[in-house]
Length: 252
Length: 252
DNA sequence: TCGGCTATTATGTATAGACAAATTAACCGA
DNA sequence: TCGGTTAATTTGTCTATACATAATAGCCGA
Image 1: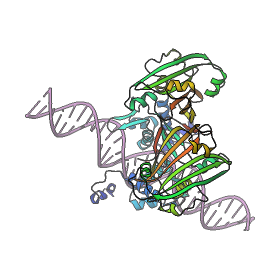
Image 2: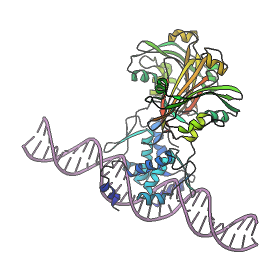
Image 3: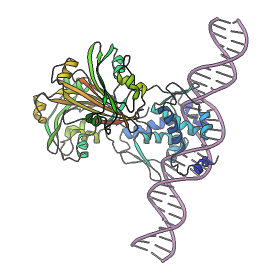
Image 4: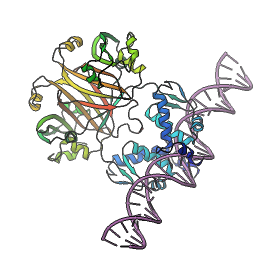
């Protein structure tokens, strides 16, 4: 009836849409344990009556909860509160240049080595492609306020990014340049702890055999590997931090 | 118009819904660079005409893209392709018991120490609460196939989880027990590399000063800290892996 | 009792239309 | 020319309805 604005009389301040109200209400019932995992959520037509709105509105709320993984929906069977999921956390790994600038520190980088070569067996392994073609191998050192921040060892697949061959990487480091130039579709991270070898120790200015955080990343465009990179941070100076909520990337 | 099922005649095999078709088509145009960041997406009524469907269907596709962060929508202004976002990766950190069992290995744990005490200043710092009340301090060692897998040092805030006081942790380790019993609303991770001290070396069966991956996690229920935990893994044996796509928790 | 047919239920998708809200653009008077 | 009012555009939300689809429940005959 009349857009359900009858509610607005009793609740003068309700600037949030109906479907979100419903969504949060249901979410609260699940989070509070009022509806335990496995229990049944009332069917749409029932909620429609309860909340006094159309089925589409209820559906929008329920679909969002389903996409967020809070409930599971099956035709004819109904909707059920999902079992507690595994913990998923959103780890924010910024582009290094942006990361340093965001901390309010001065950024600088230097190309240590640069070599274009035919793909070796090791290169192919690390890029996870079949050998053949050429790669660009780079080593870069990044500074924050003139202190060594991270060492970057990178392989770029020239079959996918031929433009890198001519790029001098004077203004932007390879990672930033890639992000700006090449669209990527998926990627993979591996995070490990390891001891600094002589090279890393020298480049980062830390004692040999000190703890380092190594992040390896592969980036793909469809089936083609764009790049492989290994970022080595001083373990005592750098840490990855992430904030998150249950249900992953959830809701408002 | 008969539901646009005229298409079904020309395309006999199209099992995916219309709004997804549109969504993917638009997504492809963005990913391919045909629509560069900042460029304008045609307004809904135009897409509605192009795709020969209702505005609601177009809206569903566009809203999904907006939620995924691929486009930005503003009333009257229109929809625009979003600027490249920072990389966000979904890191899957399982419950330890589940993590080991998922690898097909035998799981066992032992409580090394257990102490209930008044909250010390250090406890309060680590839980990030104001001092006062009591805590339960636990050290646990987890085994995978009878090999030390990770050492867990935990503080539980008994003001929030009084039930832990009576819990013997015989069947489930504290982390698993907490996940099953206490609903949490948000959390924070810190990942660091560090060297094994004598205690960790002994407990994990690794050389002193070898590299370890330390994961610290604080978990809250609303404003109240439930628990703080530090998980120390052997750095050479353990690694965090994550797969992800641009736009975070994207789309089908 | 078993196997298969049918009816029912609940969700999935789609349509057409309506009004609200937020901006932007255009206009117009002082 | 400036400043404010008005109109137009675009997205946001909502309704009411319709048909499709999947899966269950129940029935019925052999």
